[in-house]
Image 1 (cartoon, one colour):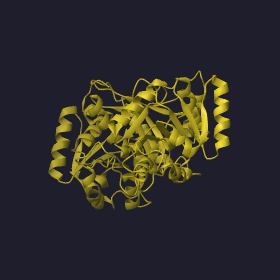
Image 2 (cartoon, helix red, strand yellow; image 1 turned 90 degrees about the vertical axis):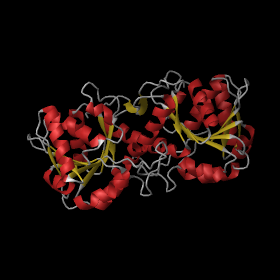
Image 3 (cartoon, chains in turn brown, red; image 1 turned 30 degrees about the vertical axis):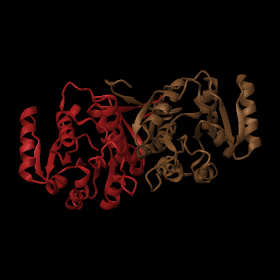
Image 4 (spheres, chains in turn orange, brown; image 1 turned 180 degrees about the horizontal axis):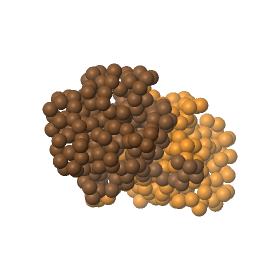
Length: 225
Length: 225
């Protein structure tokens, strides 16, 4: 990455998590592109975000949005996962692709239901191929906090998994820029923890009446991060 | 549970985690039984623990140990999991059975490798049958801390999963008695989080030079626990 900030595309960027991340990164000075299935919906969301923050966020249909961004984030419901990946597969080759998909299967969203492959992000890496550096992150973030200017984002650490160490490092640093404590969490298979954890956090919210449970990693690092 | 403390059996109780838990519960006043494949090994470990703490810990071969305890804990390596369950299956019927097995597959212990069924504890419940109340807990505990009288056990919260709410509650309370913050984490499938998390914690220990990484659940409960 050069000194020039990379442009960031958010596929599914009109949803709660995607629009929240887009908003935070746009406020941090990154060129942001909102992607949605329908171009007009993406454009409307981008226009609204631009007005709200006096920014210039762009909106495009998913395939164009994926082509336009240097780094592509995807935040879509599990049911839309594969259907969303197919039309953007060509456009993300050579890029870092951040998958935040959580395999929630309603109505039992408090029950862990990982896919047979082990986790969604591993499936994504297999589907997009080795030409794409897939990174898993942001599954456990309370989306509501992202939209709230007053909210601190240090209530939940971000576990960053992926097979490419440099790509992981890029996302660890990006997460830190908007206020998250992020950790290298190992290879793409380790996304299973963050993906499964979301169901447990929803369970904890219900069982204990917590507004938005998260996790902190405990322990004292002795190596440079 | 009556006022009388239940007796606790630790299958695989000569290993690091099992002997550590056994030691802490024996010190807390629970009748403790150490189980091992060989009766003489179990007896030797129990005699050593009894001397060390001026306690009366018993040691037996696994099948007898499983029959003798009111609540049965199992802490064995993943490779020994099914082979250990088979001979104790009959003896644990009607009991609470706490499975702490982590599906680590050497040499890649920093890589999440959950079994095809989703998690080990779910396999255990299926294998033992509905007459056994399987609870998953203690996968993420640093075993070394259990043996150290000076160590606080609040560095890592305990996620307690299982389909029987009363059995979960029993284990949440037991964990609290030896100093852990334990949480109801949902049905047995949710054991996937604790099982997978161990690989991520080992990764964090290596990557960041942490002596024993753990997690804390964040957020403020508003319902009685």
